[in-house]
Length: 363
Image (cartoon, rainbow, N blue to C red; front, top):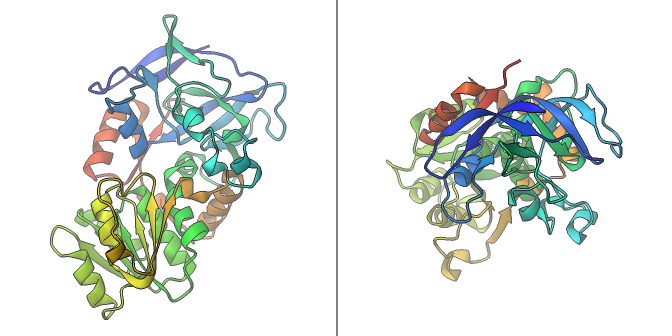
């Protein structure tokens, strides 16, 4: 079928919305009419990287919409179902069968390999293949995706909001709720107040943390952090985070720290803000450019986080329920953009003007 999709042709190019061909879903896939798609920093990183490029590609991995068609082997989903789309996993490796799909042995291939679940292409233009992303490529009016990507969305939930729950939001919230698991009355410092960091901050608030310190370099984000539950903020351009955190905690340091910046230098700073027995969660690939030395480690614990250590079909409904009960107001992070304004959405995300852009597809 003919659809509209945002194509990125090279690492220095803007997105171009063009007509492309989308193949029909196979037995274990569905066709989704995309309602909206979040813009994530991972989209930016892949779109503009020169190492291991996958161009030309249709990116987007925080999609939501309505199922139009289902393959012959699909169970649990039907046409008309409202869904959001998360990351893809094989469902058969050791990690998957032991309840850790975020550590799936094929997670790199299935999400970043540029092909659908079965290794073939779903998107093309003028007979030439376009790379797939996260097995959904939701920067488009329609998407073919595997059943493992799908999560049901209840009728009372605003469908437009739910795509980012599939990646950025669940990553930050899961880092706190699934990994750090802070006790009520404990303290935490969060470095980096994009969608991931803010989600972690809101999760800390919901967990009952009573000292929540937010660190960033953008004043508007720090103001938003206070609105969402931070008890203190630090602009790292103006004040040294470690010194200020120690002042706030009367020299003790925090029980927990979350680094959502992707910077090894910042991860090390976050570690040094914690108590001697503290715990640091590092999102994704952060920490690679600055080794954390034993002198800083002490008796502390450091752990890496991918996709919030989440089972999407379990955790995303939990976040939606928390949102509907007013415990997780992630809608405050969102700005909506027309699909045609995708390049502006990217620019506003990278500049820090918008925490979580969501692209709205044309009717």
